[in-house]
Image 1: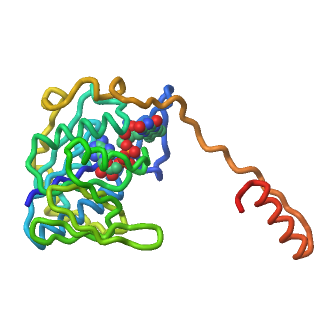
Image 2 (image 1 turned 90 degrees about the vertical axis):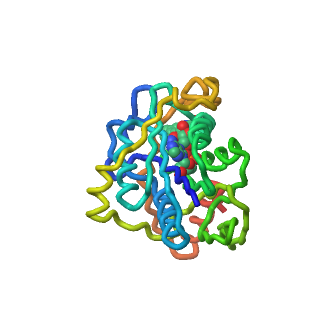
Image 3 (image 1 turned 45 degrees about the horizontal axis):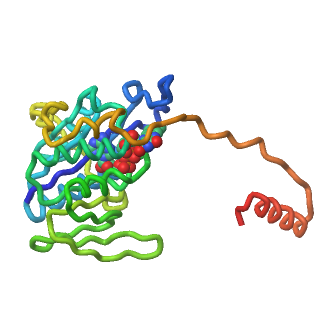
Length: 260
Ligand SMILES: Cc1cc2nc3c(=O)[nH]c(=O)nc-3n(C[C@H](O)[C@H](O)[C@H](O)COP(=O)(O)OP(=O)(O)OC[C@H]3O[C@@H](n4cnc5c(N)ncnc54)[C@H](O)[C@@H]3O)c2cc1C
């Protein structure tokens, strides 16, 4: 069984977020981590590998420094790593990102593709389902549990107040929630091996099943018009009222802001 896990290197917000003058994120200057949902997706793939036997490939589109994240994945137990990197691919929105990642996946054999539900920087949760559209395979999103049964996957799909158990024939795509599991640490031996393993690097030229109209900033139907910080909260206000009046005052304020 062949599993592809899509990983995204995202800014570690503990290190602070930095913007370029044009409002885009200055990814090169920020501390980075493996996106948490993707790490859970990788852990799920590694558990499937241990239980049923599988070959796990991790794949990312990103800056050359995403190599570090791929090596972390190899040190956790992934078998192969692919980095898709090229200036022509920069500035991609979800459409251009998913078109490019799907074109890379088309070069590979797969039974199961796992992405995270959502990346903590872009926060759209669109890339996984869009990849499945490009590949014309079923998608099960919001997976909180994954089991394999013959040539099918059985997934608990999370809803706000319940879950559904959904079965799909492979090949299919699953988007993983961080709640899926507790990802393992890298092992010391794994870290040494990871630095000896090869990370396959593909550029635009390696992706033959991809139209120039669908890549990078030019191929993105959406453009970031403006990025700004959140408006900071005001200093707050203290009122001295008896309990009944205080409740009425508070309810009035909440009502005024359409919160209740
Ligand atoms: C400040 C800011 C503004 C943005 N504005 C827009 C906008 O206006 N319109 C728009 O469409 N997009 C916008 N984006 C999104 C940006 O282009 C995304 O980084 C990119 O499209 C991926 O989407 P996402 O981060 O929301 O991923 P999600 O859809 O949340 O990611 C889901 C999963 O897909 C996989 N995945 C995502 N990206 C990659 C990758 N590069 N390589 C491999 N796997 C991947 C991962 O497994 C991930 O967990 C913005 C991003 C930022 C940071």
